[in-house]
Length: 210
Ligand code: ADP
Ligand code: MG
Image 1 (spheres, rainbow, N blue to C red):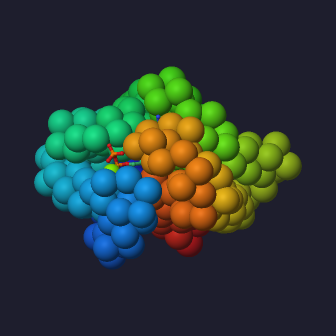
Image 2 (image 1 turned 135 degrees about the vertical axis):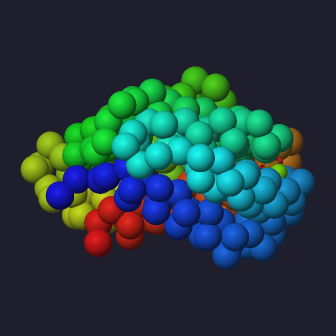
């Protein structure tokens, strides 16, 4: 069983719900090492994305993802809006015209999205950003795929890797974004963007792996 466009729509809805549920936590994390707006930024962006999504049909995964990317870019300021916008836009390009994705196509889409985030934000692994959840998730997807894992298993492994990556940001010193201005005082805090990215992979595993 693959990932249909209807599944992708449901995942985006799940992600918007998860962001709403974790809004206060994301604000709290960003208050500690940033300016406290990550939860409200992402919540505003995903609400706008849901409104636009209603105008898109269920026959093209790329069209759904593009709609989300454009909403995030136009509605969310700060660092994360354009970065998440780029993630979704690149995933959209990788899946344009496809009514359904298999594991390999999902992995390719995630790879394109993460590459876009890194091109735009210049963050590497260990810089204490969303990349620290996304890159391990991508690596786990690729290893699962090369081992011939089932879709549900591969997705679970990528969500687990994102979770480990998110938790690994706690002892890191930030080298990118607002948190980097704090220098060593950014240590001992979980990165807000790594946390919202973990939610993205977790909701994908729950929705597509069921
Ligand atoms: P802002 O920092 O502008 O207030 P947000 O609070 O919405 O934006 O998002 C902060 C998150 O953005 C950080 O926790 C981090 O994960 C991510 N981030 C910031 N700069 C970069 C970057 N250059 N590359 C990747 N992610 C980044
Ligand atoms: Mg912020």
